[in-house]
Length: 326
Image 1 (tube, helix red, strand yellow):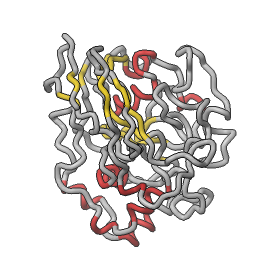
Image 2 (cartoon, helix red, strand yellow):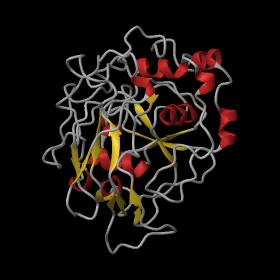
Image 3 (cartoon, helix red, strand yellow):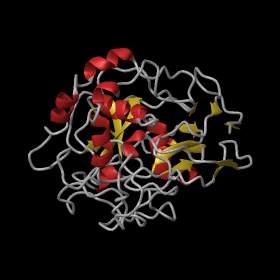
C-alpha cells in the first residue's frame, strides 16, 4: 500500500518520495489486524496490515508495559504531517514528515540479546536500513562495520562498561531498556530486526504529537506543562532505568509510544547540525563527530524531557543512558 505526500512546499535537494507504509520500525504485532493512517497531504486514510515481528521478538515473553504483559515489539503507524522543529524554540523552521511506523517501546535487553546470539551473521549489508521516504539516504555504509564489535564476546563486553552502578545487558529483568550502546550498534540492531533508525525529525514529530506541538509527549492539551513520576522516568525521582512502558498510558505520546521522554536517550539517524530550512523527510546525513539523541533519560532533569530538547553524543560512545527505538 502506498500513500503520496502532496503539497506546495519546496524542499532542498530532494524530491517528494512515495511512502512505504512498512518502511519504519520492525516489531509490529503479527495478529493480522488492520491499522489506519493518514497521509501527509491530508487525503483519505490508508488501511495497513502490520508487518510480521522481527527476529528480536522470537521466543520472547510479552513482559512490557504497565501490566508487564504487553508485546515488547508492538508498534504503531505515526501519520505524517507538517510541524515546527523543536516547537520553534531554537529556530522557526518547519518540516514535513511522511507516515512511518515506530516501535511503541524502547529496545529491551531481551530483544538485544537475540541480536547478540549469532551476531557474526547479523552485521548489516551495504545500503541496508535506508529511509524509504528519503531518496538521498544511502543506508548503511560498509565502512561502518569497522566501528562494530568484531564478535559476540566483544559486543557483550562493550555494552556492559558504562557504569558500575547501573546494570545494562547483564540485568535480570529483560524488559529494561537496552542502554550503553553506540550509534553503530543501534543502527545495526534496527536493520537486523527489519527496520531502521528514525530521523531527528521523525523522533521529534512523534514526541510533539505532530502539528499539536506538545510540550511533553503526554501534554493534552498540548500546552499543559505537566510532568511527574507517573508520566516519565527522570532525575531525581529515578534511581535507574525502569522497564519499558512502565509509565503507560499516562506517559504515552499521541500515537501510543511510551517513554518518548525519559528512561533512555534515543539515537537518531542524523549528525548533529543546525536544522535545514523547511524540508521534507530530511536528515543531516553528513557530519564529523556527533550524532543526535532525543528524549532525555533517567538521569536527566525535566528540561531535557521537553519535546523541544535534543542532545548529541559521539557515535562510538558508549555512554550511559543511551538506547534506541527502531
